[in-house]
Length: 144
Ligand code: ZN
Image 1 (cartoon, protein in one colour):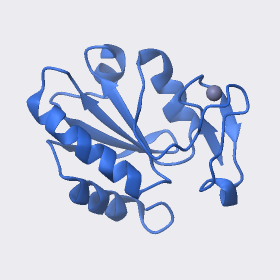
Image 2: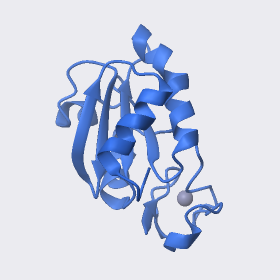
Image 3: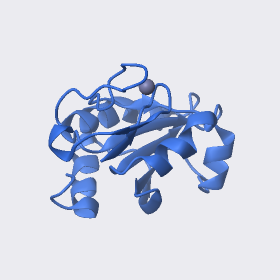
Image 4: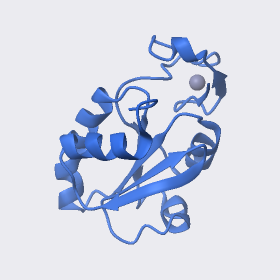
């Protein structure tokens, strides 16, 4: 399984049966599969989504958005429950290109990618249990 390092952008190959272990980036040594959201900017976003074969759930948010802040701990709690889904946070102020290209018109918006393609999206804040249930519906037993 190919996984892009959120810290340095290097593409790593991780055997499927080792994904649950504490896989580290071959280049920078940072964890590849930390069970918590990672923040990406315009510089790293495209390469991460395109190069990661695992599902990627992106939370588009902004600092001025109250519902976004309320949802942040829920998003993190969902990340801890689904270790094979990569949870990414994109600050729409800091990453305007990614937000524009993916037509994010309101925040928070969550966009789910698989194999570099968008397969689903939801707008509005959701509690952790709902995020997990939604991902299970979209992804099925292999990933969630
Ligand atoms: Zn790295």
